[in-house]
Amino acid sequence: MSRRGRGEGSIRERADGRWEAIIDLGRANGKRKRLSLYAATRREVAKALNQRLSDRRNGLPVAIGRQTVGQFFDDWLERTVRPTARPRSYESFVTIVRKHLGPSIGHIQLASLTPQNVQEMMRQKRSAGLSPQTVAQMRTVLRSALN
Image (cartoon, rainbow, N blue to C red; front, top):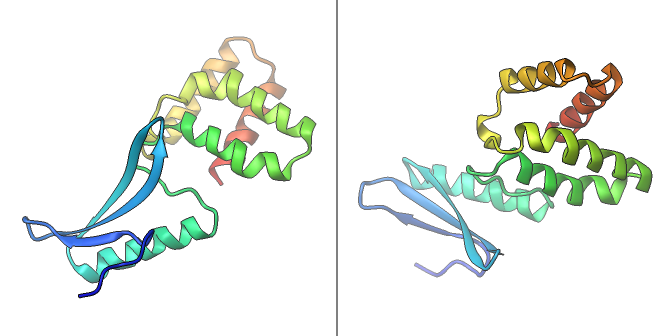
């Protein structure tokens, strides 16, 4: 069997019979980052690998299971908002994320974020005395980021 090209990921059969695909995400903070995908068959794992590689080629971030909401916001602000928004709008989004959303739900893993987490955060912000307009802006920014 021929080798896969550089940057195409790798596929192997594990000792337990499952198939694993590995994508190299480069280095962050001096550490090598990899994403592993698992499936019962080679065809399924190859399909998942090709989907993630396609997303990466199209400029979408490759989702990492342990990614927190705060890390997602940082990436979203730099990759999506900064290139498309006006400077003042970008500053407004950054302020809402840094001052309100990040401290409240930034520590939660993105895959574990639930509507109940968001509702609780909104309730806490309203009871802390924030204006209804600020709470509405928080919801708008959160909705825009998650869409």
